[in-house]
Each structure stands twice: as C-alpha cells, then as structure tokens.
Length: 241
Image 1 (cartoon, rainbow, N blue to C red):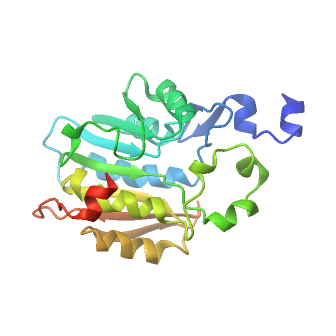
Image 2: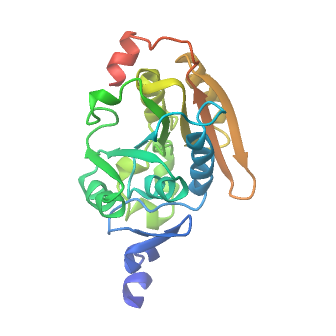
C-alpha cells in the first residue's frame, strides 16, 4: 500500500474508501473521489429535501435525484441525513455506476447513462431535490490539476468544457421538466464561475440564489422552480434530455 501511494495513486484508491460526511464511501481505482468541499452541497440539499417548500413535507418521502453521482457519495450522505427519501442516482461512467451501486444499493436506484437519459420517465415533474456535482474544470485547466486527479480520475468527471459550465448548462436546461413545483436544483461550482452559473440557471426559468462556505471553500448554485410555473417544453429543454 505504501508503494502504491508513493507511486502517486490517490490515498482513497489505495485504501478503497473515502471518508465523506462521516460515512465510509467505497471508491474503486479510476473512480472520482468525493471532495470534502462537496459536503457543503450535501448540507444544503439535505435542508431543502427535509422541507422542499419551507413547510413540513406532506408526501411520505422526498424524491432526490443525484446526477453525475460518481461513487454515490452525495446520495449516500443524503440518505443517511434524511428520515424519508426516495433516491435515484445516475452517472455516465460504468466504473462509477458499479461503485455507486455498492454505496447506495440498499437505499436507492443507480442508473448508467448520460444525465437524465436513464432516469424513469415517471420522475418528471416529481423531483423535490436535484443535485449535480457535475464536472466544472475548464478543459484547458485539466493539465494544471494535481496528478492524483489528472492521471487517476476519469476526464469525464473533471472536464466541464471550454468555460467549465457545459454540463451545468445541460443540467439546468432540463431541470424544470423534472423538478416538482417548488423543487430545487443544486449544483456545485467554483466561486469565479458562480455569476455565470447563476445567470444560466435563471435563463432556464429557475429562481437562483448562491450559497457559499468559506470554511470548505465551497460554492453551490441553487435554482428553484416556481410553485405555479408549468414545466417548459422548449427545444433547449428537450435537447437536454
């Protein structure tokens, strides 16, 4: 194990697990490792899932969707934090999906596919909280990442396109089709990208706000579907599916 770590393998891949929100999350080699800053995304999502519209939830369970789920750490942490949750998670990377199924097997469903594509159509218009720890590193900055990420994690989990916001645009474009009235989208981003991310969320019909933690150096964009707004059926939304 020391030799593998000295050779540059991330500690989480050497051990086979990462500590996240007080949980031991299985992390296989080649799978994106959960970051400590993402615990802030979990805390924000948990507060909204417990009471999506600011009042006591009437339905038996909150419906939570975790896109770009990687190892399933965010979904597993939300299940642990909430008393009543119906979890659905998805990732395009087969290795990540296998890992996520180990971490949330007893508590939710994990699907393999691109963003919303593998999710059951019955979830449309019924999701209370939609979290996406989507890749947001600009393509030209990938080469500047530490080797633990650049070499040992899949590029699809890191590369967010020219400005780092390509996946966020796709997620937010279709989010109103999947969110319940009053439901929330939460996306992790960098502080420098936050203004553009907020603008993107607003342009897709969601009411945006920004949450930031200095302690964890974490920034989360939150978009809320207005309670009385019908789901859009624009070409952009359909393409995002």
